[in-house]
Length: 191
Image (cartoon, rainbow, N blue to C red; front, side, top):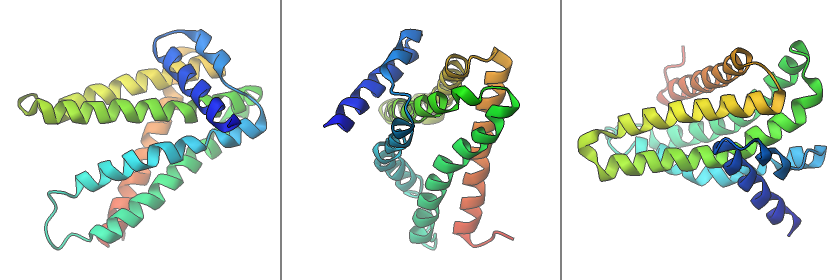
């Protein structure tokens, strides 16, 4: 029951932050146990992630290694959820923000739920308006979520815009790198 209440409060906080309301920060628990519970957001996001990856292979050729691809994508998903917090554990002291690390990762994790909802909405709009192209909606969603991530980073870490932008860009590039490696592994041509 406490987990459900905490989850709903955190999701409401991410919504408030997305609307530009820094008061959304007050809806998060910044304790160490809450930090670990924030990784529950991955479980909320995973079904949508799996659905998106499954839809990616819908038009694949018959010889495409669907099973291996889905296993590798699942592993990549877990790696992404661990890699950025681990990297930030080392980056936070370099930018003198060690004391804000727990709060930042807690908020950043919960924000992924809202981000996934935006990506799903973009894909749905692409399906509803195929003439406009799903890629355009997704690109707008990606840009909006990068800005949102930057705003969260500025608020939670109390850093300037350029530092926040660098951190979000690092996260984005880290995610792309993990995805690219995963695709190569799934296709059997890593080396």
